[in-house]
Length: 359
Ligand code: F6P
Image (cartoon, rainbow, N blue to C red; front, top):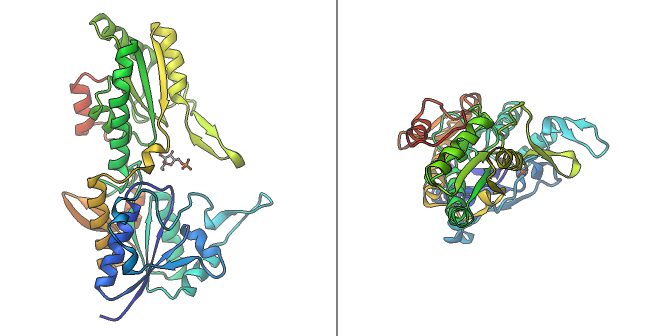
């Protein structure tokens, strides 16, 4: 086998398990006798002259990497290189510069660890620049198609479930309706899974249209049957009944979902007379050491990604299907955006348990 030089980068929002995937790819590459370098800060590292990278040596990979949250390579979830925001407010196509950066590093192939947005960009760059690309799916939102699970999802669900474990006793002590707002962008996977695992009474996800009356009815019936508290999980992309998206604006005018929990808290209090409290879990869902499931997934994905390069299979994303690691076309995965299946087992389980989905 000829010696190869491969690059690896993390792109989009971070999550738990990224370092475990990098570690696995590095170990596998070294076992094959290849060189592997880490590109810093996603594609942003390639806009630097010279490109920002570090050689990933076998020595630096102790057991720590498996446990560490975040990404040692850094990442970015802004600045689409095809319409890059410039300081004067205009946008510019910097894709050529990024492709030049890839070329300058003399790479035989690149492993991109990202979500659907990153994959769409990386795939386009790879096609234009004739770059051999392999993808590893990661996102706490678990919305990438063709894979049952993406790195980071399991940990985010574990964190949200633990939050419910901590909210339940205080809710019961104070006779309150506790509302937990979780991330997930336009898919309700985190809310649904954590809600069932954490014993929520009401779970609101963007895929199911709710009514305030239905939520109030559920809370009242729980009160009537002697329950003095209620736990509710709401996914950040759930809208108001009038269809308004709740967003927060950050520096530079960037918006992100956030705040629907407070909207619902006020309405529920008004309609039921219950005292409500709201917890917005936020980035805590992304930052902890990965669960064992995320470590396993990341390890299997890291190894498979390097092996795909060995087999000369490019434009592929590693995926988890039927308890196996497989590979699928990146294009297919991006196209098959995965929201919650309303006929699926988890929705059926929630309903069968008497959990209200607000409809
Ligand atoms: O896509 C991952 C995610 O954590 C979403 O669940 C959330 O809406 C968003 O990223 C937050 O983005 P940022 O880190 O830019 O605030």
